[in-house]
Length: 303
Image (cartoon, rainbow, N blue to C red; front, side, top):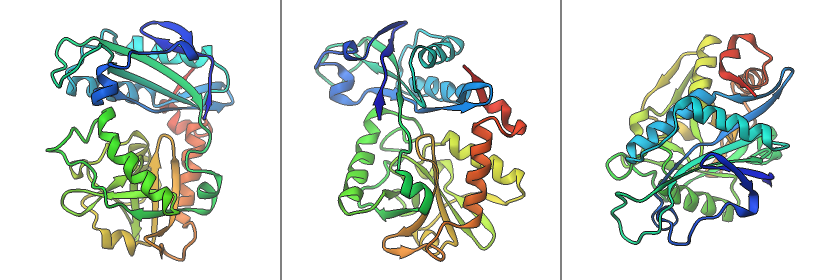
């Protein structure tokens, strides 16, 4: 990650090093925040933010779940994000975050002030160039994806991602690129920061939203692209055995984009190489986000 010069904080730009909160900020101590990750792409018509409308909608929905009083409209948030991209150089990733910044001790956050920040960075390839080109290795994590009765799993709430961090760290220490997490029922949920798809017997399957997953915006984009290409995409429970014996597996996420998986739990997926369906979807997605396919121009918010 490469940092940029300015960060948007409550309507004003401040220098990167001056974007600070108190050590007793409620979000720092208890994880009470909501965030988004949004990609920015170079196109022939200049920079474009990918699916900005949907990201802002999900951010606002997360604030509703957390009972945050967000004093900005959908349009104001979109404009602030685009202003942040314009203000900085070499940006490919934007991270808006709404969090409780007031100095408070205790688990009752009622009345604690809210702060809204928008940070932009240059992220590059999230999982690394080798994983992107040759396929990633996964390990099934011992850490379970938080289930819907234990946490708001369908929202990007800061505190929920502690479990994802634990799963990711454990996977990296053991020599894998990423971790896949099961849900409370023992079925496949998602990776530490990506949704997961499998290709088996000519159909594409992905866990449904009730399986304690985040309804990813990249996930929904790939479902639409795959169906436009004529593939049968089914959202349902996916067992660990189905995943291990799939013909192809790939992950989707804003940061990871589309990354194929060639090994899980030291078992090759298919022939152990990136598969044709994943390659095709990745190519179509790359064209869509860079403005090369007019069919998906609706997803681009020009800066």
